[in-house]
Length: 377
View (spheres, rainbow, N blue to C red):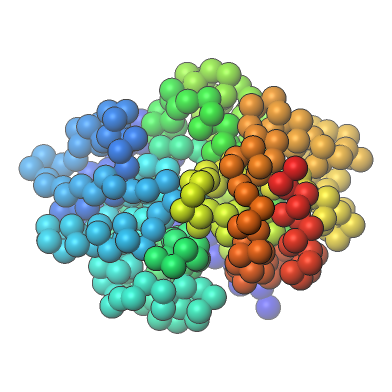
């Protein structure tokens, strides 16, 4: 049996931020907690959000989202939520702020500890529909978390785990490409490769979901075609529109399952030092994983190549490596500051990650060891 769900409401257009009051009213949110980060505050985007709040509305703010959202940050934000009498979450920023907002909505309505709600620990059944309402507003075009039914959160012990349930899906996603205008070239490249990786990994997942396949192929084509334009010109409205749509499309296909790229990037993203950007990790890890999976995806590499405008027999791994180089992204994990000493623990975490199950080719510890070695450079 194949069960297919696309469950949330997406408002997508230039200027969509102005729709926030209508969506708050529809969900009965009168006093939201805005979950964001210091970069959003410094860029003046928080004030743009405040400017469109309903007249007389009062919003609390938690702006302490770390680059990789943590259990400690969730607990701190929940304290603000409860102390301010909030009745919903507006998650505003990149994937970290949106994932943190989902974590807040969960623990604001469910008893701690957070760990018990993790997917790999049987947490799906423990997450009820009581999760506080969430409106997700992305300011980067990458994670697709605004339309995803999960959050990636790093526990106090360093494990980065997935918290996945229909109850974790934001009830609204307000996707305004204008919020991504002027994003730095480096962050545009890293988040854009995150979107591309999502589309590619979802497409080659062995699970059956033809609607997701079609969305993933279209999203991959948008990202591959427009990412260099968006990096070269932060004010290119057309390129920004397509990159944000590609990010949304990657998120819409999450239920088909990701693969070893994310198993490895989730493990590395839990490191306290160095602090590693998820999208950059995906970009660096994708080529070796594509090579590992070759021969186990049927005709899907040829279909991907065609969608990306490449020859049917193109070397996808080499094409991604070349794209990373043109975008100015690191060539390997060592350039990102990863040291060999952490790899045994990373292999252990990657093996246990929920994405490993849906990689096209099965993986054992030795396979992850080889993949990490190839990605270290």
